[in-house]
Length: 91
Image 1 (cartoon, rainbow, N blue to C red):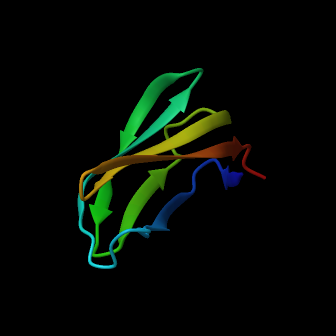
Image 2: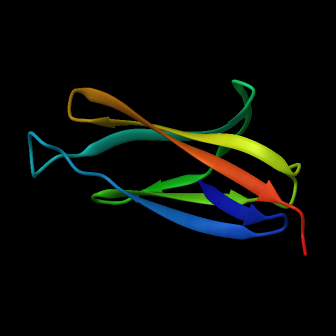
């Protein structure tokens, strides 16, 4: 689980690998922050050669539990990763 304190702004770098091709290309990517299976916000991303950078700014988000859903295309595949996220009260 990824834990943030409300007010934090972080950049996460997600490393991407391919079992079938070392010279793969990440052609598309999107990252949604969801709560109760509904999209709260689509997060800004930057596709690098073998990674996806995601910026999470918790300033305008409510304290609670979310899912971070990353959808991306590598060659002809569409892949997804899901991470649990907690935004905690400021101390």
